[in-house]
Image 1 (cartoon, helix red, strand yellow):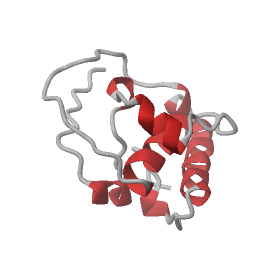
Image 2 (cartoon, one colour):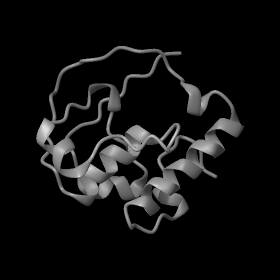
Image 3 (spheres, one colour):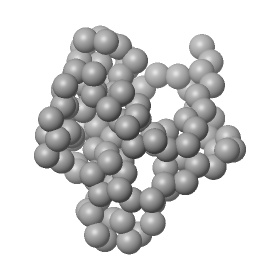
Image 4 (tube, helix red, strand yellow):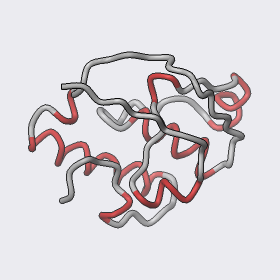
Length: 115
């Protein structure tokens, strides 16, 4: 199965629609890590999502879109391999919102599966 995902320019409100930046090509300046922290390792499958949510949505770190293919990878991953894993991942996504003092409703949870 092949998926061609082009994220486009960053729009803050897209997080509210369940959008997630393409994390394999997410580059961050060292000053963001110094100022806002690193990965929250208490999260298993949502550490990358929480970091991007915190940097981009909570603290409004500046984002730029590079209109180039930087990564080619297979479809799937740990959080999508089974329905049980997708449910666990959605719970972690919700926790990422709560950790950042945001109210997470189901529509906020990034996923390809509606729960």
